[in-house]
Length: 441
View (tube, rainbow, N blue to C red):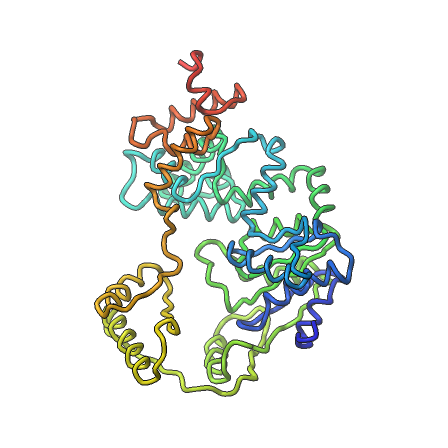
């Protein structure tokens, strides 16, 4: 902890009441979280099983686990939970499935599976692209804790009414299939803790201190899950920055940072304003840019790394011209500075922007590694084959059955699958076992 700056140390040592760490880009927020985990265990005597740290990506969770273990002598503390919101929600569902009305072998539908289910429900009655838009709308409703009945009551036009009705059918189908989607991994635990005092008390006794990264990206469901988990103990360290919120399109609410101050009057706010990543010139430009943002909390980043080189802004005609220019810049810089290709990186906002760069790199025979592309096991055809193999190994794997029931198409509509799911629920058995029951016919 001796290498932390004064604000970082204050954030690590604050355990008396809720804390918001307002962490600018490159200010060492991940280090604060991992140092605080180690501090709570080593200096404060917390049992690892009573500490929970939540973030938004599996990669960030793995990094936090590794750093925390290094600070604790290389051993991963038994029982410590460092995960995404979805992973924690899945663990809660597995522990509490009976209270929520699910069988122990409930299925988890990923984004592709839930879209496929919606397409089945919409078959023959939709326009091009409506399935994607309907899925996004349903996901936004769930993230805002709006159930299908409320969505129906609030519908103001024919399209909203159609999507709300589809939402209700989608929810009925999930229940019949003994399945949940990714949004349910947060929504169902929230509903459980809101309506079941015994479960709420049990989880609040387990969660003695909760650390949440990227708090500006939480949606309403995630915000309420945090509130319900910490209870009156208010053992919370939230780390966030309203200037870094980029997920409003999927329900994130940067105003949740301000909501913390309203919900927790004892909230302490500590600002991390020293940037360890960028030079002064870059921070000056960034500060001028974000000065126009509506701010929940004011801050000003600074750096001890010197002023730095001038910033270059290059305008290009289109994406293809941009790719040609970037690759030309790399080749010129490599020739003049005698560097290796592995020292260069190209960053882009969306995967669709990678294609022009890939094409130009191939034209110049430049080897490259594409990070963040589609994983082999995420490809549709691979997931289909894996589902067949999983079902062959375990006939009780309902998630695998749901994936391959209509792959290739067997004209099994959602009504048939829903009926099968209801029959399986009544019998307390798997979908395959229910399909083989003579009474089903």
